[in-house]
Length: 244
Image 1 (tube, rainbow, N blue to C red):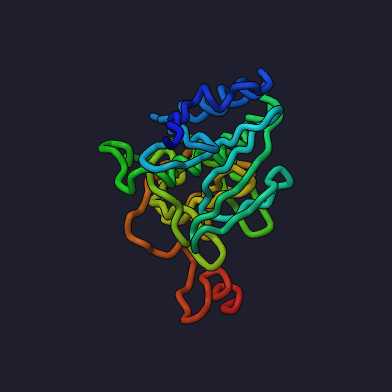
Image 2 (spheres, rainbow, N blue to C red):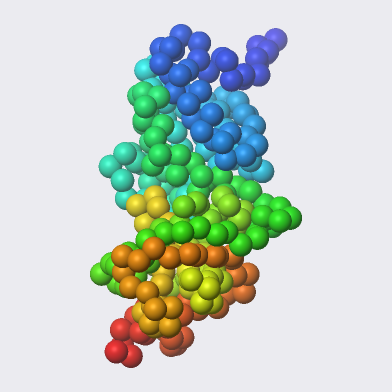
């Protein structure tokens, strides 16, 4: 007679494993549940963390965990030991974790992006309302920006979309000190930045270093950021360089 197969359980994955492994898993699960509802789906060799679909997987080792997260782009980090491109806009990234302390802000940011990708494309009623905050206007080598104090994919339930060649993010309608404009929020180093065009600075009468009042909400229709030029075969940023 064939041997009966015992269904996997979450607990069965931690038999004969170091206690620290359970602590790491508990830290991952707690961080994920700060983002919203999460269910655990134990498989034969791993545990899936699921929103509407699986956004992360955990493989248990004797002294560590291997966490696999979804991402819409590759992420350059020495912490990521394996980069697997599953499709044009989906990557599976592996991180080895040996301590609960490694479930830090950077890793939670990766979980948040994965969680947003695995949710419904329609955001819940009321979640698209404008967000308001104050921030310091910062100057960079490509212009000015303000840091956005949240992940727009998590806040609005909308996955990042292509903005121009090599860059994904969220198009937004915004005001700066009451002056309306449209531009984009882009991710960089696990933080999120609202781009501010040079002509807007003059209109609003502000400069780098000033503290400004911001209101932003997502734009559903794909309109180019302020100052971008649609040129056949060229990205908006490259077209702007050519125009100058």
